[in-house]
Image 1 (cartoon, rainbow, N blue to C red):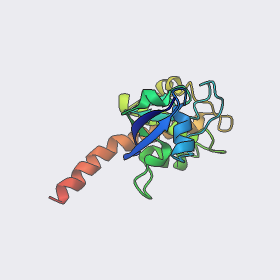
Image 2 (cartoon, rainbow, N blue to C red):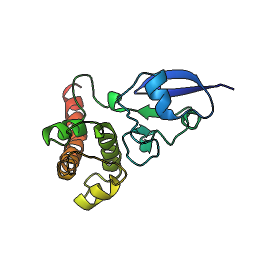
Image 3 (tube, rainbow, N blue to C red):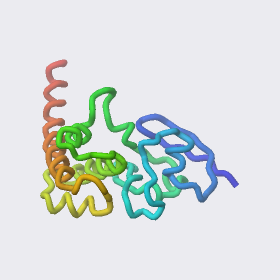
Image 4 (cartoon, rainbow, N blue to C red):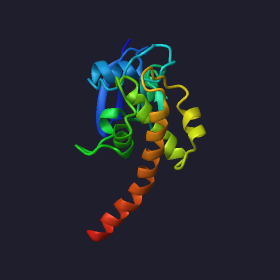
Length: 169
């Protein structure tokens, strides 16, 4: 039995037909060819598959696609604005918070969710919130620095955007 579902993925409408047991990560990678969402463990332990669903981070390997029906999904591919990286992506780059890059999409999206809930997180909050995301390369210190810098840039961004809108009026 197949079920039609509709999602808004990275701002675009998507309609797919899936079996009820199909995971969201499979839809993103196989049906929509968005391979930035990684499958690392198949047990929800590593966090490589984190995406934003309706603005909140979820492990796409634990969400059935039918549960996401009607939802808004943001993957790492949808975070940047064209060639301009999202402030959190830029912070990860600037602070060398990646090496092999396998965990990076999940880390970045988890960090974006954290900062949306706690705009000025402490290092302890960052560590606690990223606890479900494993990195085997960086030792986490660069990631904590990047999240702190990304949070600062994200706080500054709305003010800069408001100023830019005001100049064009």
